[in-house]
Length: 484
Image (cartoon, rainbow, N blue to C red; front, top):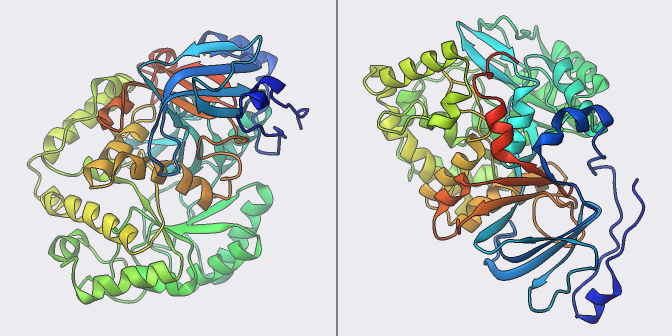
């Protein structure tokens, strides 16, 4: 633990609330000597006391924005927030004039990966580029949504925790818990409930802190996995197909991925424990206001099953949607860039993508309906599919898409920050800009409440009070995603 720090008496005299800034196990340690040497060029601020003055603040709680605010950071923690006319900047603090800028909490994204789809069923680890890009894009805490190289992910998490690497704090999900029949060579196929129990226990012992069921798991395997995960004190999510959402909720799952986009509850003739082909047809035909859909939403809310919105990856399958921005494509090695661009062009006319022109707006409406019914929506970006969902850009895009879906910017930000922190059990430390919390702050040029695309202009990202030059990190990795 770091020593306690208390803001100077002047703030108390000014009537500003002061917190004893006790550090806890979620604090980011100082960067190691090696990391400081390698990444010093990316660090803009690393002073013990900072004061952002005259800023707009959208704090992640869903509250209305605050204008002309001063936010003080001491030893990596938020020490004070208040009107600039009232808050006294501590002597010796580094003052940052934030006129025309908005302070947001660092994103807490709950469906990220440390690998990238290379085509032909191959997935390559991006243990160097992705953590840096996630951080540069405003993500300061992330859950991996399934792992292809769990030891790599676990060891990266430990390196970040030690300060030997830069990147978001990681909640590492173990390897995919999948049944037989899916020809992905890097996935283990469970042989039954006993194997599910054994697999969960093994990876929990090795350091995984979350688990994910996948498309071909059986109900019996899923039940064994859920019971074992819960016995270990963790949570389990699922990208399901063979098991319906209703079945999973009744078995006790904590979370379901991709909103309602992969549910098979309304597939005609659905067979137990079988992932049906072409399930997107049923989604395209679904009446989202039907009694069955309303009943499913009510069940998920009653069972406290959170949904993860990943609109970013489904946008790539939808004809008429924009291509990934040039900056994101520039990060890819030439072969991957061509692979993505060729597939995006084909998506505009390919027959099996046509249903997504109907599915994508339905997904947006269903996520809104779920929240309106009292459900917990969290968010992620899922850099898979045929590519184009690239860290550094994807989290910002997810927030924009939530706004397009009908959420206000304040609601979208809460989904992408505090909701995720609460689900991961980290909300006492991260997820919102509040006194006593860790200073994870994304600096946006402009006012994203009025213009959500302002989130694309994010020059600085702070994690535990250390400020990183986002553009410099991204530029340093151009042409390298696909290498490492």
